[in-house]
Image (cartoon, rainbow, N blue to C red; front, side):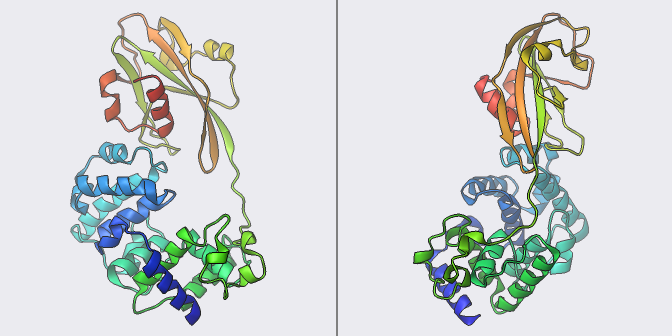
Length: 348
């Protein structure tokens, strides 16, 4: 155990990245960085962190913002429930704690969108509380160093790794310990083809000595992806197009999109033209073009999407929940990354 932590801390002091959230112990900023970095690379996350901290300098300013403003700033990061939870939690902190981030683990863990890992990271980094932060990087490092093949997504695995992480934790400086361990997994003990010959842990790493590094960590469940087929309608009427807001509990909730028809199977172009979307019934329209098909991969599903571009020839408004938007104002709306790519191609 002592060899592990000694080598780890020496490595961290020599190799740690200079990241903006490492220049502060403000729990609001630590929390923000942790939420942004879920499912996001550090290089991409930095610019979002900077924009958020500039636009919303305190929890109170974030809480007072309109949700659309928060989602627009989040656009491109994906997993938009993170942004919605971030906004709602800021409002909770203002209402329940007068805008002061709680300084103990149980209260932090109660906040929406914050699980055990994030609560431990905030607690240890901001308040020096002795809670180990166990994320994917930590699972990988510990499973390899100690040669543990218990599945990390099993009940037993989660319990065993949590216990081990608690035993390794430096109670005198838990924030440094957690950051060092996560950084080691992010930079040195990477998922694929780690540089084992130049790893300072090599002499003590049981997986390396048994040539099992590429077999660890073990997962017992594999993510199954389903296919979905999206047909977006770009309805043009002079300088205007139409948008709708996604309000159901599905991907991209509360983001805006072009009117959508979803099918259970892929349609050919003749079948698409025969569709009579409710928002186009009894409307005289001129077909313009089909976009190329795009494949958009999410964690549990694959979206196959096309845009059907049409023009409404009469001056009547579409009598549905669709919003008429001037083309020059499209950039003000938070839209999924997939549609952003289509808009770029269509010069909107």
